[in-house]
Length: 208
Image (cartoon, rainbow, N blue to C red; front, side, top):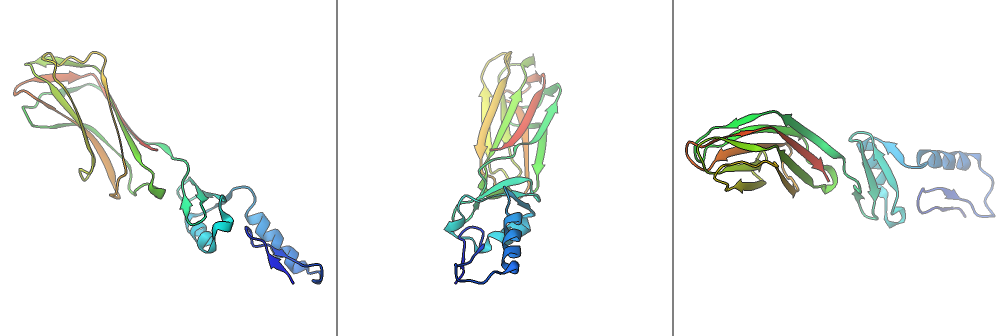
């Protein structure tokens, strides 16, 4: 009596079974569809793994809909690798001339309109070029804020001249729950009437 192989579901005949070309043809079809890393649409992938169990642990797939890699962990699909850079904005010189507490958006980037698949996290990098004083005194605050204010990271310079000759990097990690992610870099002066010039900045968002 024939049995079924645990991973691909191939028909394994017993020594007493009669020869069947249809069984061989079906087995070849299953092998061909699973050669190396399976590749197909996300919809086809979810259908394929619907009946999977721990017997298929470790099987890997390429999702052509989202261009991402999936692995079956025995009970669900997981994403072992991130996409990397998914959005970036590079801007030139910006002047910060607002009064105390009034924020000025220096730039923003919207990398995607759906949350990362598989629970991947996001890393936000804001590389700010040298900042120099143009008038007044005090400090300047830079903030990274996403669309729904789910994440805010502030860093403040307290130098009276507001000069940051080496520039600065703001970096943070979080898991966005909103479907549309747009991150903005904002700046506001900490002393009324103070102003500064930012030589430039690069705002990058990575899936990690």
